[in-house]
Amino acid sequence: MKHKKIVFVCTGNTCRSPMAEAALRAELKKRKIAWYTVQSAGISAVEGNPVNPLAKEALEKEKLSLSPKFRSRRLSEKLVGEAFAVVCMEEAQRAHFPNDGKVTSFFELCGREIPDPYGQGEEVYLATLHAICACMPVVIKKIISQQ
Image (cartoon, rainbow, N blue to C red; front, top):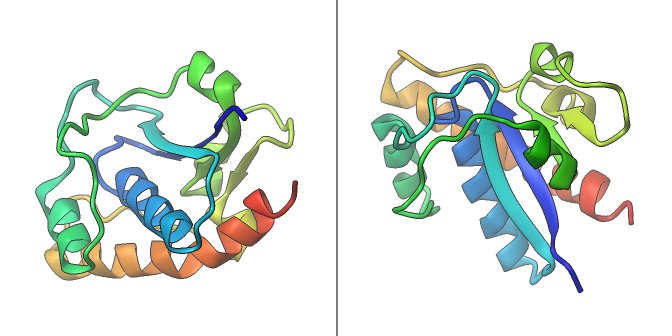
């Protein structure tokens, strides 16, 4: 069976979307749900940047891991085309895509946007990660269970 790809999208692919990538991977592993590949990308990402140090610290505090080889990537048409689902952090990001049913947002799925913590303190990054993690059961229910 071919893996289905879920892609989380934010602006720069160094904070929110990598945290969401790590959170969903952990939740899928915990639930023993296979056949999904989880990735992230940014609408305005600079290719090759590492994860933000405060995002990395928040992930470590919550015992979530991201590959040490992680580097930011810009969202491409190819990545969207290969995806089973694309989940944007904000509705404004979702507006960049055609309404084809494949692209959604945390607001559409969970009733909340995930604000950008960039430039703020470690408490904000940790709160952002907690908000993302709180949404993962709904993401799984609405995206993965819809099959």
